Length: 113
Length: 117
View (cartoon, rainbow over the protein chains, first blue to last red):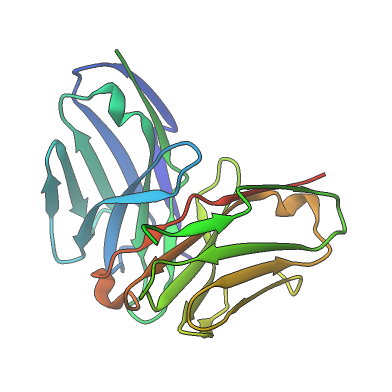
């Protein structure tokens, strides 16, 4: 059974720092991995989606990498800003037919001004 | 509408009561998903609709949970005889087409926070 973990559970950094969030999954047979952001009281917003054949994706100050064989993904945030404060979730899609996504528990990020 | 909407935003109920949670997807989105997010846990997939049919009900935790979708639009998640462990945030998402190859993005609603006393 696929399990997704995220480390750390919470992170607090001063504004301007570069930071890395980690996501691990137990079964490397995935179709894709997606990083989401969730603000308090809001739904999830998709940040980056990496197909299983890809190694990384970039969007602005965000860079996500995928190492399928080792079951790991990282989300790199450059020059963090207070507006980046949110919970970051990763999710892996485990099949191409159903809608079977497995989510991690999230990392709660606080960027202090 | 501009996005996925859910109602109510908060629901407090007593153990044993039935509750209905509503989701209005983005107009034109044929696929609709329900998830549950418990405190400190990741999102848990509950059910997926393609149009009005639900090809995948595997995530429903018990027979107290049911969902329907009418007119290919609004969906209702019903929990009967609620238990304290049902307390969670229930999130709905929609996408234009089923997530074939993961290309079609899911758009999430703000969720309904359910508290069972």
